[in-house]
Image (tube, rainbow, N blue to C red; front, side, top):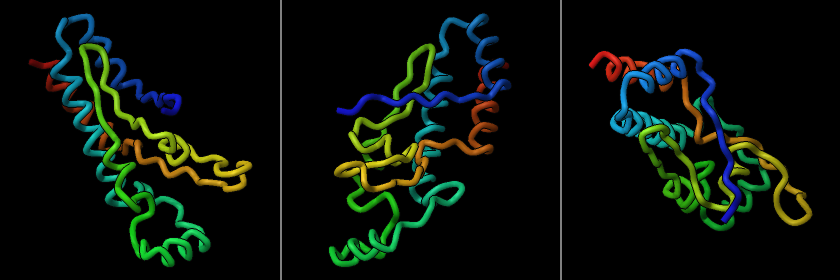
Length: 148
């Protein structure tokens, strides 16, 4: 199993609402469940749309290799579907989390050098990325919860 990577959402408006809620309410679990659901839906959309914004195309050598194995044409990060299906969420009273436990999950999220002698450069293809619309939806469900 790989070391976990942590990606924090830096959105002051959402952070402020959540801090207000934490002071006023003891049970934030339903809100965190909603937020985790938004994370999951957003990630599914990222895989389906091949990034939002679009991920960098595969290198010609990768396309050639996949074509030879009858895995191309296809989707950039979904040869077997293993990465997409490994993504899961967790929520409790204080947090909503999304991630994958696959060894190679982080390299696709943040990019970097991989393979034997780190000879292959993998571009970042952030599949755990929230869009502006996702942030708006998180803020909306937070406000709805706040106004209950």
